[in-house]
Image 1: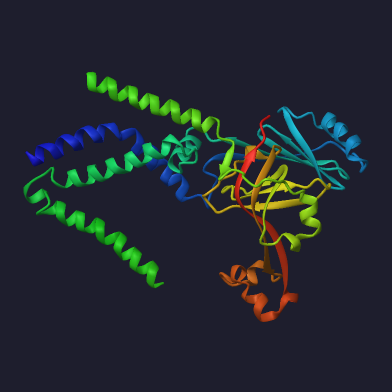
Image 2: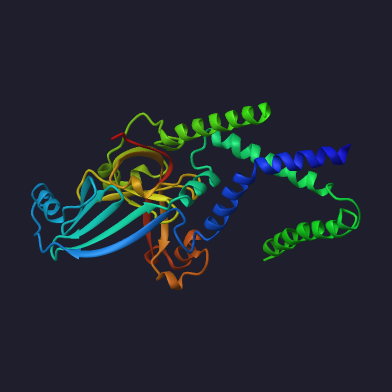
Length: 183
Length: 157
């Protein structure tokens, strides 16, 4: 009876959480390497020139720069970062304009399709109801892990190979925890 | 079949509710609660006077920490000046889309002694612990002021 309940829970909850498991697994790999790449945004850098603009008052310089720059994206705002530098903030891009030389650096950013979404869920950036969903998923993972122990009897089960593999799964994090604490 | 339909309905409702909550989220961290806004130019003109105080500032977001979103720079009301709002990594994540938006942030104004040594000469942890500053004296260091941010709100368009 107990094994039948475990099998039922493992099967039903397993199917239910395939999608969430993929979300957390894919995002887990992506954010594990956050120091290697930007897991959320695709970034681009382009250089161009609009020619020297001069260093007049901001109210005069800004419209001239915007006219010469003619960004493809809607402009949100501008900022005179320094006497010879104007920044233009547009949807999905920032332009750094050197007023003396006219050189322009465009730093663009766009959300990575799918990855941005799964990372948002994994890191619970939105908080709110997703906190409950993520907690429920974590609870289901515990049930899956425990029910999984009792699915198979005999040599391949807890008393045999299954038990050995389970022990290995405990030993690996324990060794790592010991190493980092004593390091 | 009936159970499956009910489960699907619950999942859909949760997903829609979550999406709506995320969509309207323009509040970061604890948001803002301080009663008065201090001008950034006033803070930068006399930074020591505000050290240790909880303050609220408003300015155009002109820079964001790449990759981790762990700080933003807010433009001062005086041209060319900006102030950094540093938040705990992962607790608040500012997206690059915030650049160019008017942001109100609050937190505690802090002063940190940072070693003037080139980064490659600073040993692990030395910068944070100010060990070089304590050993070599304050001439070997500079004071970096920033707002240890607890929350922020982006003004609607």
